[in-house]
Image (cartoon, rainbow, N blue to C red):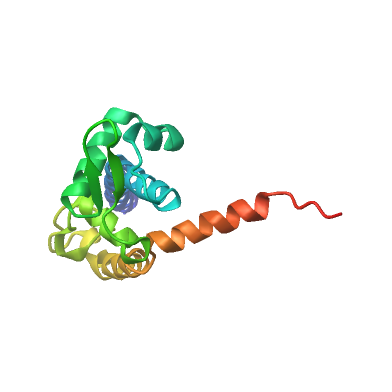
Length: 178
C-alpha cells in the first residue's frame, strides 16, 4: 500500500513538475516576444511626447529610449506597415504618429508587432490541451485572464500614457515659492 501511495505521489509530483516547467518555458518565450512590444510602446509614447510639426529622427528616438537603433528600425517598420506610424526618408526625414495619440490603443500596438493572438487568447500558454490534460481544466481561467488583459490594452491609449508621464514628470519637479 505504501509503494502504491508513493507511486501515486511521485506521478502527481512529476505531472506538477511538467506543468511548472511548461509554464516557465512559456514565460521565457513570452518575455522574449514582449520585449518587441515594450520597445514599440516606448517608441510610440516617445513620439506622442515629442509630437509637433517636425519629424523625429530614429537616432533621437533610439537615444531617448535607450533602444539599439538597428533593432528599433525593425520595430518601427512593423508599426509603419500597420499604419500607426508615418515616415519620411532623407536628411530631414524621421517618424511621426500615423494617428492622433488618443486613437492609438496599446492593443493596436501589441497586435501590430506581435500579430493577432490565436483565438483572441493573449495570455494562455501556447499549445493544445488534450482530454485528461490538467492544463485543459484551466482553459476557462486563461480565457477570463485573456479577456481582462484585452479589455485593458484596448482601453488604454497613447494619450492616456502620455498624460501619465506628464503628470509624473510635473509631480517630481520641485516647486519654488517666494
